[in-house]
Image (cartoon, rainbow, N blue to C red; front, side, top):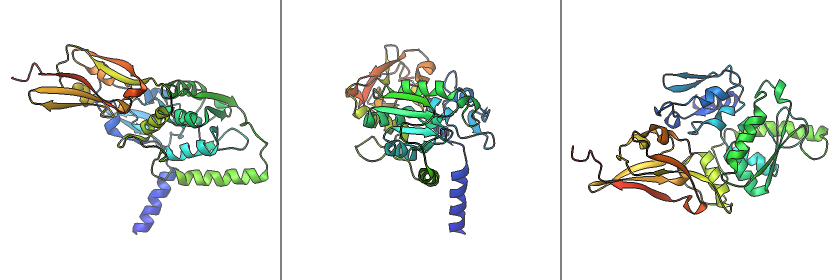
Length: 313
């Protein structure tokens, strides 16, 4: 029954439209001050429920558009990105949604494209062309997709100066014929199988280990850019070295170590998403968001050092 169970699980995974939810990276679960409801606000089908300090996704209502994954500040919602990255590479930076006619590489909905995917593709090909169907009448993503893509492209340019063009209709190229139609159908089957493959990105250049795939893609794109605007934080005087910022950080970018009678706050820059959870939750309000230059990406910065006022209590 082991093989049958594995096949059944693989089938269920391939047909489940919902993104994966990593509770430990959810700002709602982390009890960040102000919480977070961005996935709830982005979902066009009412498939997201916020219950018991966690996110619940309705398998029936979810269409798999991916809009929630792009707005999640902690990258708690995500699809496997390896297949999407591979499709962008095969298409040389051109991809279409499933409702756009013509040939070319296809994704179910362009809402699944993240800043990391766009930035990494832009670092390879310079320009990314996205062909969409009629979003206003689409039952997958809906009319908010074009605006969503603009926000994703703007965020992608923090990591690489990618040019993103969104067109309605076919991708540039020849009209699709019978052979191309058959190839497209075969491609859809391959993409379904690709969703079962462990996450990439493709191993061309060394990248930090232990990061979500989205951050690894951003890091790859940044490594090929002349300048970046990676988010980071700065801690000012007045820090009490309490553990609140480390507790709410969804990617463990901020951490605290003890050195003798001193405590030290440090930041792994490449793990920072700029979510602002630490800024909002800091009791003395001494943390602010800044931008890191390329030289600091991949580094661990010392944010604050000292003997806490509560050390002798």
